[in-house]
Image (cartoon, rainbow, N blue to C red; front, side, top):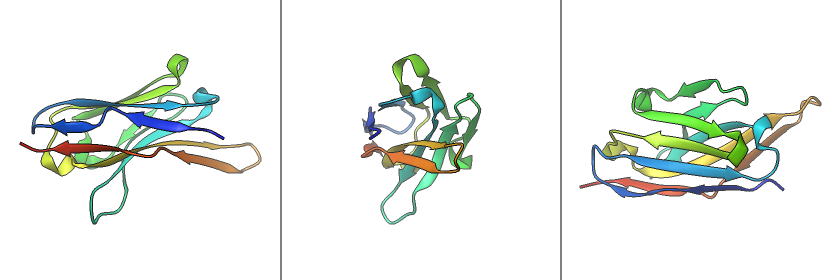
Length: 119
């Protein structure tokens, strides 16, 4: 069973920065990785994603402020969050996804880490 463990959340003032980390057990390099978030009363939304080949995409609300990166040697994906706004307050979840040649899809989630942006 693949384990996905996030860390790095916390309380930060508006305009501040945080870096989230997510460590994945197993063969990390074959997974596409994503960061999602869910605020109270809202649906879970994509924040940023990075493929096994390194291609990135971002949610519109975080473009230019957040950066996703991965270190395959450390089995870790990062989310650097700058210029944080109160609207970024949410539980942030890490996702590992891959599709096998058979067509089966494998999808794993972490337990989430709370990010609160408040003065």
